Amino acid sequence: MTEVLEAQQPQKGLKQALQRLRNRKARKGLTLVELAIVLLVLGVIIGIVYANLDTGAVDNAKITMFPAQAAQLEMQWKQYENRVGQVPEGNSLQVLAQNDGENGWRAIDEKTITDMWGNPYFICMSQQGFREICTYGADGQPGGEGENADFYVTDKASWPTWLKR
Image 1 (cartoon, one colour):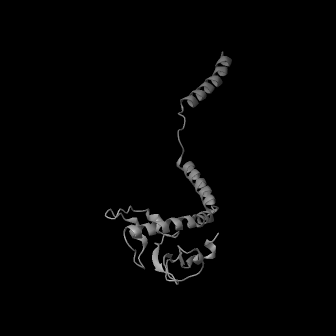
Image 2: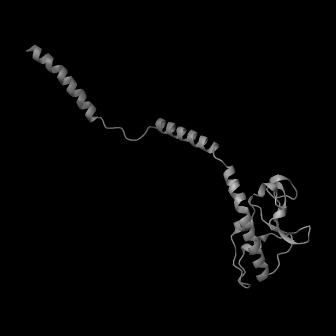
Image 3: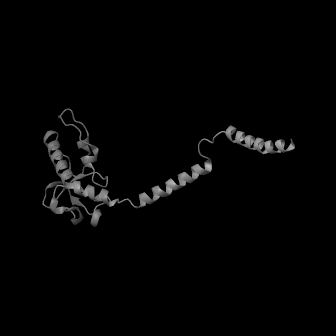
């Protein structure tokens, strides 16, 4: 009889262990450590991707679009001067972005009156005595070379070589 009791005890212990495993609730969600590791891995991946982005592609797109935008801006400037009046030399083209209901002028988008670096275009006098739309280049200051060079938006001959394509 003792043999039967001894044989039942291991089965009873095994049943109790299985019952404890069943009663234990399943863990839900992530621990803070696991979450921190996931965020760290994502941060590293984002850092690698960002470092390898080609920001030159954005600059190339702006340069490619510039001739069409320059032609559109010149046309809108001339329409404004025909309807409303002359923009004084040295003034920015900000007036083109303002409605003038009295003269029938509808404002244009503010992005149109700023150059590819976000500086406002302005009216200046060319060496030949013509009124032109001008930009001071990337630095927004008179003079300069390369991207900082001043040029007349409305005169392709004055465009810097990096802009001519």
